[in-house]
Length: 260
Length: 256
Image (cartoon, rainbow over all chains, first blue to last red):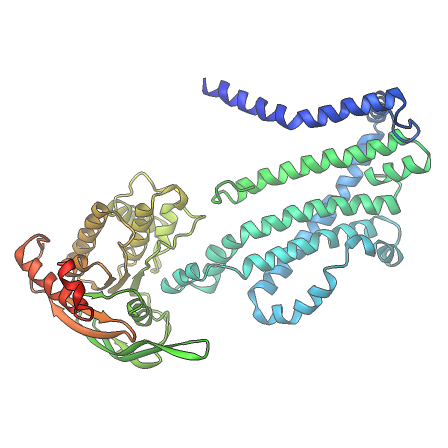
């Protein structure tokens, strides 16, 4: 009985989540097939899905997806490593915070994408410059949130550490880091979505593979289907990554009820 | 553990003026004694407790514990039960209580001790529960167990049972007294509950506000276990009440 009602609940919320996209697809099909939308810009759904299928079967699609994911993985990994360590140092030491506050304030508003030309000039057109853009894009949100998390530990909990005469190390690992974990996770979530934006932007400017490349290739070759495959892929994989991160977050910060 | 509070004065700077929270507080607490401190909110009773525990400094005067002046560095043989549970939301009941252990013990010894104190505060079965899964009263019991497990020589309790229902409150008062009888821990209990003060204390220290001063120290010479409904108890209660409400005498007849 219980399993059954749970299944009903899930399928119910799935239907609720899907009905608006479904209507949009129907409208799109009507618009493109009736000629109301220009077919040289908007492909019909049939055309799009058959090109997509073709690309998947030839193995090209997987290559593009994997090269984007590979870049995101490398860049995000380095970015979060740098973000968490630097954020920890700045968050823990008032001196470090004071000496970096102006620098961070000045550099942070510069979007990572704006630096793509600079990265290409200095690091070349290869993989390094793309990974660097992603690293930078994920670094900022992770850094800022780690600093916030580490410097906002509840003083009442810190007093508990003082009263029980705990060492600095114990206070750090048993009080300060766990308190900061929800913030750090928020940073990681923002970092992942920023990585995704950055990889696509970097690939649109200079690449010979990847989802961003599909978009710019589709435009150059006047193949609207290819362009749309790139655009939709971004949305779909963006959603999948987001869901994965939320799931991980729920497990990692299990003590926050209704963690989102 | 004897505690000497000598001429303690505490001033908080608020905006441009200095607020005097404690003024010339003098109190001598014998080893193994239970002192209840009662007073309205803002009389500085919690501040006094923070100064004794080393979490806060006196502006003037000093606190001497076992011949040593408290200098801000806390000592592990003084326990504090905070007003709010202050548990780590990411740790289980077990882990929260274990945090109170300051001695170097093996894993097995720790486990045994934690189990003992979980039983003592009646939380058996909730070892693996997280704080947000517990009621307020249960969280407070974890807080108390965390302080007791350290077996402090002096325990400072800051309105420890304030947020609890009457039954839990009485149970925990008795638990604390039982532990006191066994370990002869010096206890200082800050409370705004006059009955609790009389039930627990060897002496009741009445504080008045603005600035916080010790107004009167009333000895409670009743044998334990005390009867809250007895006439002797009522006599002392009347004495304490009269200390409180002589400032606003018109209140007195409504209260008693």
